[in-house]
Length: 173
Image 1 (cartoon, rainbow, N blue to C red):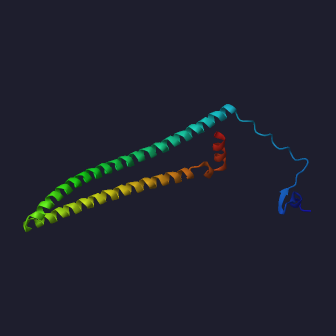
Image 2 (cartoon, rainbow, N blue to C red):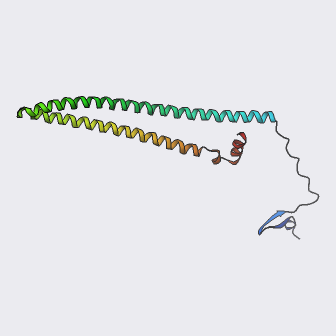
Image 3 (cartoon, rainbow, N blue to C red):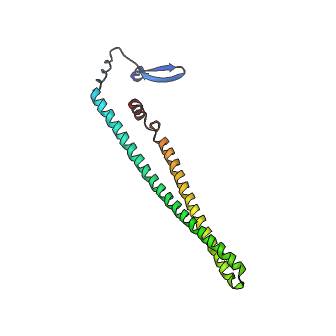
């Protein structure tokens, strides 16, 4: 009789059939369980992991704060620039309206200056539209950064790491 078939037995576990080695009575007993780890060492390791996680969070949030500071300063500069341009345009518009009323009363000689004034007004409006477009770009960048941060915070959850790291993070809290 073949000794290799004598060492294996078939098992049926609710329709799942598999082979396993036969157990003998003279098999050596299983090794004793490993000794329990030192509670102080576990506590030190847990604190180290927690400190490392907090330092990672600190650097992550510091980078994000720095990024938002840059975006905020850029937005503030654009708003100030737009406000200055608006005041300048209002002054130009007032002077234009005053000169336009004078020009209407004057003869044909002043027609060229009216066209020039209208061109200046159009160019000022174009600059305002360009500044508003820049503000929209900054707002879109801020929204994209926020979306990226939310996505990254979901990706960084311990659920996506290995089961051991997940259990370790759950036990730490």
